[in-house]
Image 1 (tube, helix red, strand yellow):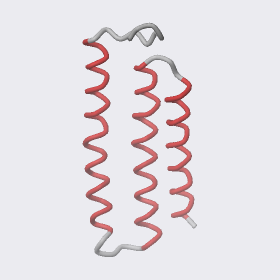
Image 2: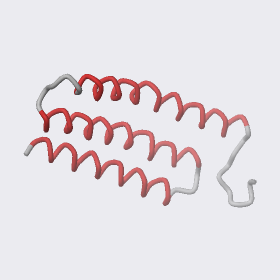
Image 3: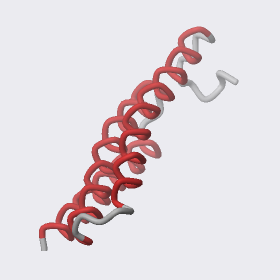
Amino acid sequence: MIAFALIGFGLALVLIGTIGILRFRDVYSRLQASGVSDNAGLVLVLVGLVVHGGWERHDAALLLLLLLLLLTNPIATHSIARSAFVRRHTGAEDDE
């Protein structure tokens, strides 16, 4: 039961982040919406999967995937934000 709650809450956070990407117009707001909610949502989904199946050998791969995601998501978000800053992207529709 706890596993399903973790997975459901994680999926809800990912859905909220996706709606934030579609709703916000500024690149920095989109990064904030997606970066925070995707990290938290993916952590909850992967922890829920580990809790659901009980600890087995293949759960180490899920934890390594979790570690990889926690390391690469902030780096990717920072790279996109830095690129937008260097290009002086304002988020306006005619800014292409």
